[in-house]
Image (cartoon, rainbow over all chains, first blue to last red; front, side):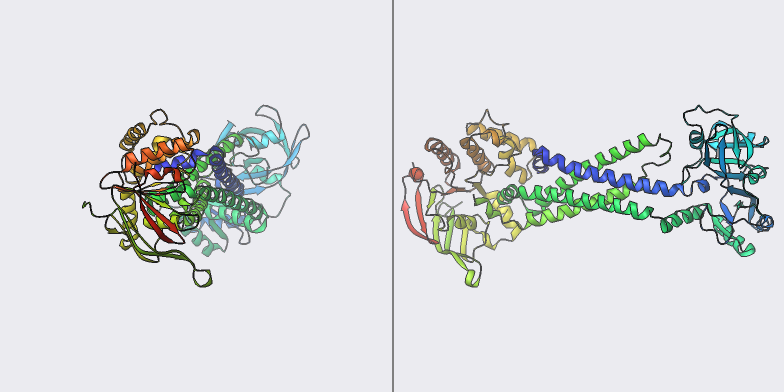
Length: 379
Length: 234
């Protein structure tokens, strides 16, 4: 009877395609919006996640997210280093000076000052040049997107001169740093160089980053640092989630995306559900005939479910393909780099579409099951 | 099968719809025996209860009281699932509007009862093609119902009703939508293919032109059998 169910489903092409595309576009919209939402939130933690050398971040107790820093005292580095269980700890500077090109273009930038001796904290993906050249005087490495922002339409060339807070620097490398929340260039320099780009404060130490000794977990080390120094210590993952939580709580991003996602779900449920329901209602006479012939209710349930899940699966696959194509195209764009179709979005959307299909099936099945087979004798 | 067992035996069959002020008595103590090996015609004006009667006989509706036996089996005593199984194995239907599935070809439509019984596709379609060939549709086997004439559609419906070898065929106005000649052809096919000593056919009709096919003519009025008459059964 599966053949009969399939033929009933595909007989009227317009309705069949309408069902498929209702599910497909809902799937596309849900996967698209949830992935972009997650991608944008992930950007709030890009500079944390780029630091793959360290597992632990130490900061002022009042710090809520990466962008918001209150300088630590220089002695705090030594205090952190005294905590048992720490393998090593180095300082990290974060500033936001204005970068200016010789042509006069300028942009606010994110400058990260890396430990002079080890260059710990640098992202490892380089497009041109090398990290080692940061040891040269007044040298910086800039991310590719930042370069294209300051030098639009120009080829990637090393040796260019920039001004950062009136300090002339030379570009010695182009990196593929994670995209920041705002489209600012991400510039890496040695700590001793980077602190000069910021208006002078009494202390310039933004963060201490470190790694636990063997046998100790990052979480245990964070607890030990907090207990010994009174400073706030977070693992990389915890700090990244702190940033995401901050933006979720303090910006309109979740509300805006939530509305779009909600609309996609409602439209998907209503359109696909109603279309499928009407499809079943219009076929009630056929189901009545099958009932009269002696097709039992469990078999009819199987037929309706087969129809519903076939439509759901095909629509979901088509929508996911559309979403994958969308992200494949836009991943190559500088502004949307790093925003990808996340498997979590696909799984979540799959769950939502299954819900839509199940609701539509249940509504339709009710009508089929209560159908009086004697109706087939009525003309 | 004992020849003395009737194909259908209705005793004091009653059926009402609704309760209280809205209660309508549709069948008022119907007593009817349709003999095996015969065509029994059920005649009567619209609204007299013919369709309700065949619905109860076919097990598609429950009676309010009385009994129905199909070849000695009181189907109303069967559990719902067993009743469906009994209907699938022992009954065939021919409807006035044919009720073919528009998405299936003639062969596939005819094979539906076999598919419902779990017969494999290849075997079901082979049997359907053989039967359609016998009913004169050898050249229209892959044609959908929308491209068949009324007579051809009714022949496909007849094939669907007969393919699983039912013991009782229930036909509701099988020739109503046809001209006289086509109706004659369909009735000839029906009588030729469905009748056997251990089988029975009940035909509800308004079409008095076909009465010469009947072995028994039962006239209904106001929910009762008011006249039983022997036909010629030609």
